[in-house]
Image 1 (cartoon, rainbow, N blue to C red):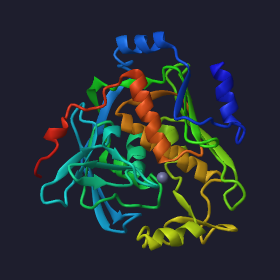
Image 2 (cartoon, helix red, strand yellow; image 1 turned 30 degrees about the horizontal axis):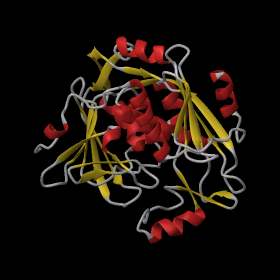
Image 3 (cartoon, rainbow, N blue to C red; image 1 turned 135 degrees about the vertical axis):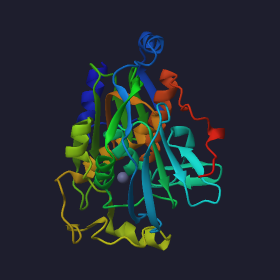
Image 4 (cartoon, rainbow, N blue to C red; image 1 turned 30 degrees about the vertical axis):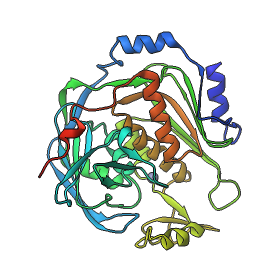
Length: 338
Ligand SMILES: [Zn+2]
């Protein structure tokens, strides 16, 4: 039954999602209980952090502000935490679903009046390369855009080096068939893993226009993230650019540093893979799903979903598995100087 629904979801354009935010079609309560008894399947691998600090400069995609981003090693259980170093009283914001504030077209986290926007490509690189504990220090409201992909952040992680720690990394398994939907054509289906795999697929279909329907599915590992996903850039339609720039968004964006689709395809740019857009959407999912604060095992297929639905999926997965979201660093301890 579950398998059938999943297969149906894999057929591009062939799956219509019903209304209502989530329906658990095949809730295997015994499996949820089992996972809880076993401590969320802990012990699959050891936590990892960086060997040394490494930094990167650039300008933000949305605001165009010059920014330096520094990735620093962090202790076990620390998780991924962003620190706004440009504020008089630097504030740390855990990259966890509880700190997400809805914003169009990106993932933004906020705490005590400070925020960091467009964290998803940094998060994807850290999750993809399995860096679990990292303090990301940043002196502006958003990270460098780089080329709109995660490649620059993967290079940064390579420069910093990765080291194993001694505590196990927690894994949350999709416990039962889950369906999260926003409309008839926008939704997500997740199935429990067969073993310990983490698969993310994306079906992209914007109808007639310069971006053809396409799909991409990856079994997410550090190797596959590096080889198949990290280079895939974000994209925008030419007609959207003017509207965004009228709102002060992407003023420094050019067809060379952002992939802009005109009627004939990418303007003054070339695709890095035929289905680069779908690959980027998978990359966005990997980044947003990392807001759970644990590894995920399961098979997830998204259709035309965006950040809002990605966040809702993680909230539902956490509720369904009773996964505790907060890291060892308590929110009240996150406000500190330096
Ligand atoms: Zn993106």
